[in-house]
Image (cartoon, rainbow, N blue to C red; front, side):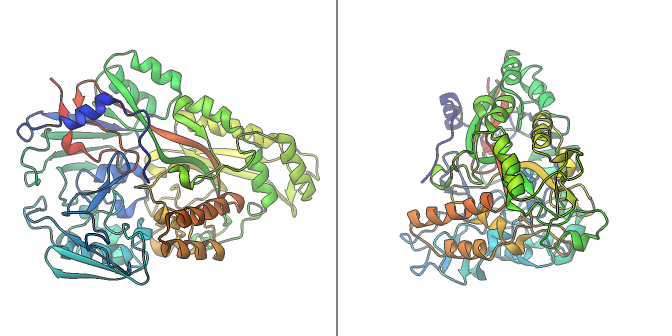
Amino acid sequence: MTLKSHLLGAAAVLAFASAASAERGSDGEVKILYWQAPSILNPYLSGGTKDVESASLVVEPFARYDAAGDLVPWLVEEIPTVENGGVSEDLTSITWKIKPGIKWSDGTDLTSADAKFTYEYCTDPEGGCASATKYEGISSVETPDDLTVIVHFSTSTPVPYGPFVGGTAPILQAAQFANCLGAAASTCTQENYNPIGTGPFVVDEFKPNDVITFSANPNYRDPAKPAFAKVTFKGGGDAAAAGRAVMETGEFDYAWNLQLAPDVIAEMQKGGKGAPVAGFGPLMERIMLNHTNPSSALGPDERSVVGPHPFLQDPAVYKAMSMAIDRPLLVEVGYGQAGKPTCSWVPAPEAYAISPEGCDVQDIEGAKALLDAAGIVDTDGDGVREKDGVPLSILYQTSTNAVRQDFQALIKEWWSEIGIETELRNVNASVFFGGDAGSPDTFQKFYADVEMYANTFNGTDPQSYLGNGLCDKAPKPSSQWQGENISRFCSEEFDALHAELSMTADIAKRQEIGQKMITMAFEEGMMIPLVHRGRLSAHSNSLGGVVLNVWDSELWNIADWYRLD
């Protein structure tokens, strides 16, 4: 089942169909603006979307998802299935056949050895791989010849399209990263900033948290692509400045993630230089609840131990916090038609989404009553409730942008009404999502009580994404602070459901199991979902070939972009 992108105009589809057929590099330079600046070009060492997407110009997977959410071959001849013999009858292996003649940008051949190395790189326990769930359940990777990769799974795996699939699981060149295994991964600055790839562009210069310059890959597999000779990929600033730079001034050709109020977008579009593009995929804004004690009095190892937080694991507390939030108002203030209220960790595809009763109705009095019934009351008259003598005082952090700061201010006020004190903190987005193991301000370290952000996943099957809640995926010092289980939520039942999901082929049963896991995340305090967000970006009126993809990297088809006459 796939979910078509909403709001994808016919003009964009036609532009894609008429993608560049001229000489490589004939259209000069294209300028891209991501106001969250990339900090690394190795997606295995960052959970930040801006890092994954900037890297996608260079490093590529065997297969990725198109704009309709369908899996399509990228570096391979076809998508393996049981029907074509690429997936074994017992569902314990998948065989990928690499297209002959694909070169790395240094002119050497892409081979099966590179894929096997990538698997070893990400599964090294000391490497801190941010995409570890993509490689769950593999017993071995076999390379019978230079163009064949056989992934063997330890059990029957009905959906084997995790390893080497999508923007978060590309192939790394074994020769370049040979000395970067395990604990050495984060120390390989040259490799992580200047990866050799098979993609349409090569890195000329990378200035972390600032700007990247790329040139057309001379060894790219299609001699007519990319149409652009150069890419300037600028990072920093804010969403408003990015939107203006495309739609009002025409200084840039593409601006990503315009997290702005709808009236602001409409006013920018009047500038006549560009247009917004939007689509609904699985992107969801949420508040993550810390299951560890973030006190600065504790050392990093203690902060990363799974549980307990002084009060955030009490159902009365986190349910009251959720009830106090007016989600429809958040949508109105922040997103307009590009947002929908949700309490579902996976809001799309629709078959996996849950809709708890009362999710879209604020209930301040009900939240107060719930806390009162649990004996969590204000005993000293200062307006702040206490649990077991500990005040319900929360540090609430997020990345810096206007919409998120508006959300923080509203939610702080609503929580104050139910007796919860809130301190607000915002962090530069490039730092917050940067994945720097030495920084105390990353979303992975989570040195706060709650934090707000959005993320998504590649494709339409959420199995790997739901694995982000597994106990062993919590970021910790020994994993270089990488890991997808940001809240440090841990449940044996949740882990068992994920194991069952990974062995279930029936679509209806998979959806049933997935909904159980999504319900647990909400009911047991992993997170407080807020808004199902549409992806909203903008491109100049002179840029052709842009097709917004909500299921993979937004820059998935940059090789097909071209300059309109």
